[in-house]
Amino acid sequence: MAAQAFDNLQLLLQLLQATRNLARDMVQNANTHKAMATAQSPDVVTLGRFVTDSAASYNRILSAAKAWVQANNAQATAAVGLIGATVSDLNTYTSPIQTAIAALAAADLSTYAAIISACNNVLATVPSPNSVFASMQSF
Amino acid sequence: MALPQGVNFRATAGYVTDGANEDYEISQSNYPRTSAQGNSVGWEGSISGDFLDRNNAVDRRLAGVHYIFAGSADAGRAYRIDLPSTGSYNVRLATGDEAVGGSTAQVTVKDGTTTLLTINDTTAAPGFDDAVGARYSTANWPGSNSASTQTFATTILRFHLAPGPTTGHTVNGLAHVYVEAAGGGGGGTTTAGILLVPGNMRGNLGNLSGGYMQ
Image 1 (cartoon, each protein chain N blue to C red):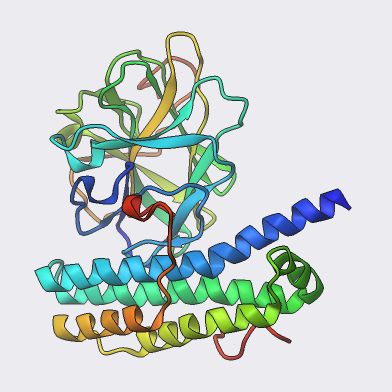
Image 2: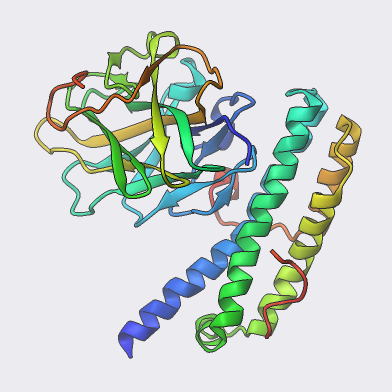
């Protein structure tokens, strides 16, 4: 029983990486890409590739988590239950993240202004997680 | 995925300004994290080390360090960068410490779980080893460090940082890692296929529709 509890905790932490920490990374990268666009460095094609590749990476991370939850619903339910949440709560939390990823993947990235607009959309859509260590930007 | 990908380890995000192909790493056990360049990166394994800002007057790549305590019971930890495909890549790194002579420079570069390179330098003086095990001062590493060209059969690049020996040392540090497609430039020199042997012998060698509910 104890081993299962520790296993569930590890799974919960991994789900956290694919949800809350994914949101954190999306916000952080949107701010970074926006600063790059404002500074007009690197060139717009390279920066556009950074954004496109970031969207693909977000997609891979969220899709992997979704696939695992769908294939292991009972264990996922037990894992999120450790913090009093449900799998339905996961859906609610990831819904805006999912929307933002899809929009970013389809966004016009042909100009610096368009990239800033795409980044602003991420910042407006994705929840920015609070942190005790916000000044360190590390968690 | 967009290579090149450089990663600079430090404690504070804004301590220095990274290059266009570089991101900073200030987190623990955070794989998979999406870098600013769009690559999946991050620390795997247990939390046993820490980060430090060292000196923001030196090259940005050497300004901070991620370290693991010497003699730790932990088996070490790996920093992972996912590659876009199998094939040949140029790998660069800086292992050591800008400020503390008690840092070893011991990093194993792996293709998935297969060891490609072993940097094993226990020199007890400030400085950094590069990807071919050559040691440089903080001032000389930026212009002199060499890349090592390696062929990957998997798409997983790992820089494994192990706890070093305790005698005369306190930590084992990693300041910078970098990977690019072979032939991708990046400056400095490139050495193909070098394999360094262990020991104090430096230089010898989705689908996004729907939710989670079924």
